[in-house]
Amino acid sequence: MKMNKLVKSLALTAGIAASFSSYADFVEFTVDESYAAGSGSMVVADKINGGYVERITFDGAGNFTASAFATFGQFFNGSNSLNTGLNNTYSLYATFEAQGTADSQGNVEFFVGDTGGFQIFLDRNNDTGLSDENDVDSVSNTGDDVLLGMSDMIGENLGTSTTINGKTVTAFDFDFLDFSLTSEGDQYFVSPRPFSMMVNVNGDFDSFAQTGEQITRGDVSAQFYDVPEPSTLAVLGIGLLGLGASSRRKA
Image (cartoon, rainbow, N blue to C red; front, side, top):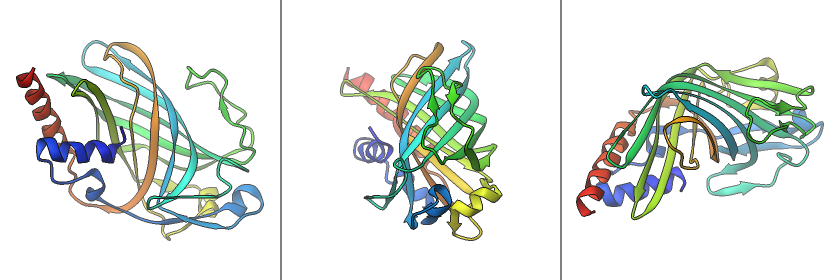
């Protein structure tokens, strides 16, 4: 289940009044596809969508480390998907890493990152991928790839997994602060100027146990924003824990 659906569900069942998208002013951005593929036009979008593979390891003492490889296949503007050269003549991919703590309360499991980073790359030949689909470090065919931007600072973030009416619902929402473009990134992301300095990464994941090393997959979206407003993450966390307690009482 996607993040917005999860939040809407919780708003109805646990009285949460705001969605994740309300805590930040996501902005439109323009990319120059002629820089990526040698030809193409300007694309105005507000979201990049794709999928990812993640390795997450729990140490048994309440800590985790995670790394992920994501491929982005489509631009969106609002609810409209855009027909562009992305994933046709060229591709974008990203790598993530995070370290933090994990815990559970009732039927709600959650994890919070303390440190981490995000990097996004341009693959002009549209041929970069994992040589082993279960190994996020086996990235191959990177010779023509260009680093577009990066962040090495995590802001507010939360990942949760809970069971609602017998169905496991998962969601994560991570902010990466001080996102900056490289000189090559300035030629691809051409607007706004200066480019947004923060990126929000959200999506869902396969359910997994908080023990040992796990490989999980899911959907991911990336959006950019300028000045964040107060986050509703704490409200969501309280709602999830309350929902878990309610489910136990009903059981």
